[in-house]
Amino acid sequence: MAFMLPSARRKQGDEQPYIPMGIFKFRLPFIHYGVEVPEIIQAIFMFVTGLGATAFLQDMFGISFEVALTIVLFHEITYSLHQLFGDPIIAGWITPAVPLTIGFLSKYAMGVDRIEALIALQITVGLLFLVLGVTGLAKKLLDIVPNSMKAGIILGAGMAAVIGKYGFLPLASGGVGFAKYPVSMSVGIVIAFFLLYARGFKEMKKKAGSIITTLAKYGMVPGIIGAMIVGMLVGEVPVPKITEWGFFVPRISEVFQTYNAFGIGFPSLSVFIAALPMAVVAYIIAFGDIVIGQTIIEKANEFRDDEEIDMNPNRTNILCGFRNMIEGTFFPTLTLSGPLWAAMTVSVAERYKQGRQAMDSIFGGSGTFNIVKWMCVLSLPLVAFFRPILPIAIALTIMVQGFACFYIAMEMVKTKEEQGVAGVVGAILAIGGPIYGLASGIILYIVVQKLGVPGGRISNQVNKAVN
Image 1 (spheres, rainbow, N blue to C red):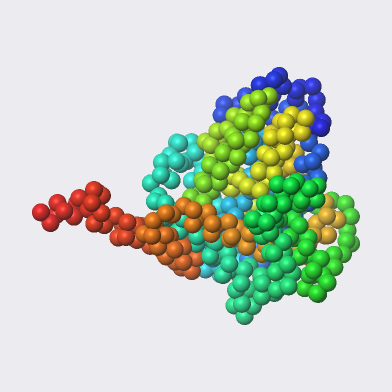
Image 2 (cartoon, rainbow, N blue to C red; image 1 turned 180 degrees about the vertical axis):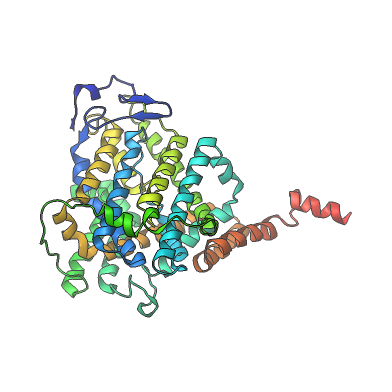
């Protein structure tokens, strides 16, 4: 059941009410769409995933938890811009790019240099989203990039996740994943992988028992909770202590003084140039998410004849560009601002398929979830309860994403030449970074897949030169 004002009710087959603003369609909760109770409950549990970014920020930049929480709060609020301006997708991090971003930033010294590199990277990503979205060149760019390179980029993200500091990097080398939380992380991985990927769980879902159906809705959360319980039992995770009640007061002035472009200065042109290859890698990954998100919503809408949903990838690009640019300038975060949280978009879409009695509008589901999620970040008791598990939540997020990267990349390449190029590019990208990864991809694509192939442009040019 959705709670709404009469202004939010639509006629059969119409779009949900909105205020037209060109390519954007302005909608407010209660006024233009109903608030859905199931998504309120999901947000109370699922906000912990986004909260995990505080561990990244503290570890990579040495900032206080309060400053990190302020940055995460701003990041979470910007997700609501999608429903506010007409996009039904639940946005998220550019998750596969996170291990690569960490590797890129780790090459800079802790402090001002590293913060400047992040600012340059996120603003550049934002510019790519905006320019390619406004001009409509996004799809053309992705069509130019060979499948082997795309697969290599995704494969490299998966490799970086597994071998990186939040994966299986040894403690002596700075590992803070399995090396620090071996028991709790193992339990969390087993639970999360079983619920998300196991063939056995898919078979169990077909029988649709009430507990199984509930677990399936919450994705990684059961794995995080399981890791937390086991971690406390074996002493890897401290027992939560709730010492404060009420709401968090953001440390905005501290962020402006010590962390963003206003406090430390704007990065130089050379820093922006150095960030460009990583930005291109992040955008290629993110564009794939836009396509996936659009497909999920359109497929769900096929089950409903009572609502028309307007999906516009250019609008999604523009909103992601705007989010990255304002975040990169004011509250930069290394998770970057992507177009899709696949698990939650699928969860909302599946409930939407059940009919209007289950979810009145897709905007009610996605809009409610995003608003309640950032409100949960303001709750001091909720934050305190989940704070001890945040490092493990991050490690589990990275490992789950790594698994997904591997099977997605392998599905993208068919021939042995494509598979070989993708594997080498992925390894170089994970170890050497985005510049070497992209350069090796271009060279290997030409040498292995094009050079000497009959009918290929390069082959024709070689033949002409010989003759």
